[in-house]
Length: 269
Image 1: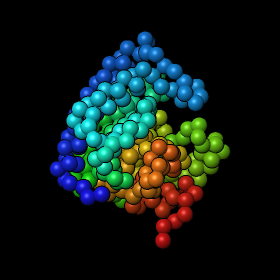
Image 2: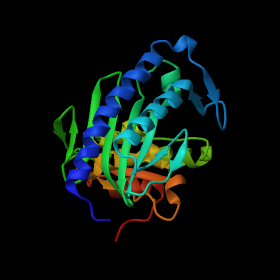
Image 3: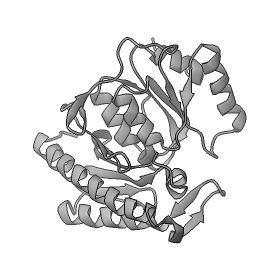
Image 4: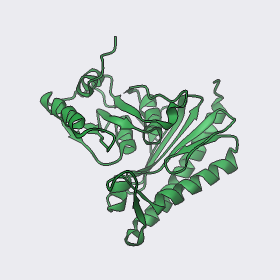
């Protein structure tokens, strides 16, 4: 798909505004969480709140008003096909478990695909008022200041983000942790894969790996990391794969080979 720069810039500007507005709504629910309605999905650790649904509904309405021909994929309401070639990929609250438990490690994640390629990525963390934003060919920013992935850091003097969920056997995740620690590395897991991908783009983490993620969890972060100079494990989006999960890895060029080894992925030629 041939991408017009003005079309990308218009969607990036809208995504930035939507992320801040959605974050404010979500934060109001967080501050009144004693009355928040929370339901389990696949298991008691996989939860959704009324805030997730209301925020996604508001995002979809604003996108339909501004770009009615665009498609939208959201975690809570699935895929609505479009005709423009652009598809918005939304996670209204990534990190719902930290959110409903009153912790700050959650965010609003908004990506836009042009065909199969992420061309806009915006992640907003309301509790810290940090807005990460990237557009294809425009670099990545944190609160409007340019950011790059960490340089000159190794697995042994940096920190890796890891993610896990009910799709991944415990022994598989334990093996990743064991190999990482055995190579002298260290890790964090904060409950929001999108936010940890943003941390890779901002140079706070040297890498992130999760054996299974969905598009709404990772594509905004993928755009950010790509524009910040990082390396990525390709995420499949063509031929119906957009609605299915896949492994996700993002890293600095210095760390990518070690992280692939830890993840059990073949080395690049």
